[in-house]
Image (cartoon, helix red, strand yellow):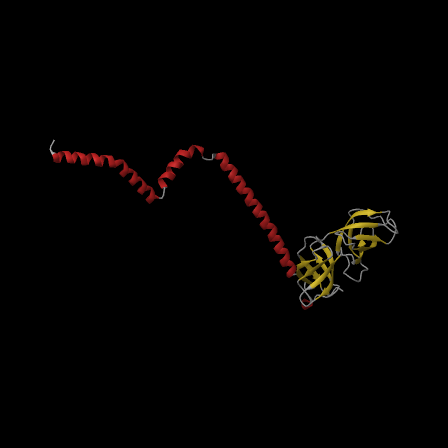
Amino acid sequence: MPFGRSFRVTQLRSLGSLWPWLLVLLALVGVRLSKGAGFADAYALMTRPFWPGSAQGEWVRSAQQLGDQARLSQLEVDNQRLRHLLQLERGDSAFEGAAVISREPGGWWQQLLIGKGSLNGVGVGDPVLAPGGLLGRVASVTPTTSKVQLLTDGGSRLGVWLPRIRRHGLLTGVGTPRPLLRFLEKDPGARPGDVVVTSPASTLVPANLTVGVIQSVDDRAVPATEAVVQLSAPVQAVDWVQVRKGAR
């Protein structure tokens, strides 16, 4: 075999042995340029039989609907609350809406601090109401804040009236979340569920403001019947109040 022909055959054989490596190199360059799209497509094609079916899709849609309903309910609650606060702020001029800005850390049922004071016409003794009924009275004021003594405070005393039995009583704070109602006579006929309002004879607050309902009655108390009252205003959760100005 001539030398030139032998050399060309040798070159062709060398190039033939390099083709697999060239193909590998081209494949790597293709993967690099396509950022792995081909592998992703191949993986998707191979795993398609294991993809979630219609049942899983229904579960996902059901969970999404529940989440949407929960968010909608929360938005409705927030909307109603904001509407109520706006109504308090823009209501009767005799009332002054105020935010609760502080509570007694060791006894939230005793006193709280609100963000309105003498500059807003709030004075000592003014009744303080929350959604549901009477909460307490203003104990002291600064130009921009007021301290409220709650009906549950140990120093609180308030004359009240039970419309069903037409009896007076004295609502006394005892330092717990529920005040004690002391009647003026033995066995007045009170029972759990009776509504308690401010007394028509009271000189401290306006008459017939809702206070709460009787939770339990002790007919054996001495010297007269006593009852535990559940306040209608949510003392533990209220964050906005109304002050009845000039009601002293």
